[in-house]
Image 1: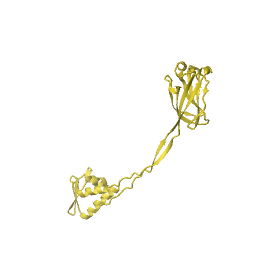
Image 2: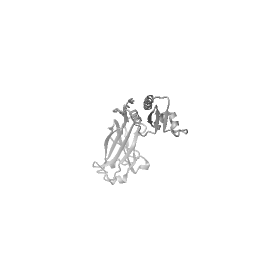
Image 3: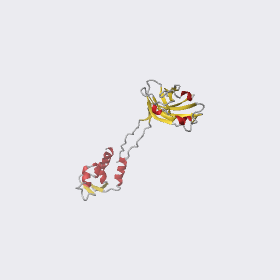
Image 4: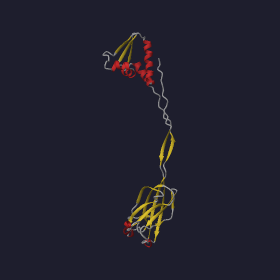
Length: 254
């Protein structure tokens, strides 16, 4: 009797998603002419650049000629300020002093890690960007003027990108055919059934997997010592053959 093949339905992966975070980058140059004329305006007082727009938000650079506090009066301080009202935005920004459009050798390049600007915290920056004495003797200051260069990277809100995937088809199982072939060939069989004068070779492990009776008979504490050959009475060989093939089908469908 030919074995019937039972096939599984294909497994289909329908979609996938990716979280995407992008940045919008822009820069602004703030040139201060007449550096010496602005010294002495007072600690904590600042000069503001023109407003510029990056990433849909308005910004400005603050420059403190005399420092932003008594403790930092010997340093130049620079801050990035969010000018858009009632806005909240996360950015990364860099500040560097320029000399003829090139970074000064003695100028620190300050990269601020991601910071969130909002109405209660509109400025982030550096109170000790560069010491005044070092700045005044550097190449950053030329003809009583200098340039502070600011690069702003506005971090956009993350969004999800969905994509459709090609179906992944799982090949149909042919376990039933393989077990039927194994039964028919008798390869590596370790038990035989004598039925109506015919011999059927089988495998203890397969039988024990599906039957508690066979499992106890072959592998239990009370296993038969001569369990390699079993004689069955009151059953015809053809009936037993049909039963064994049907048993394989049940095994594969379970």
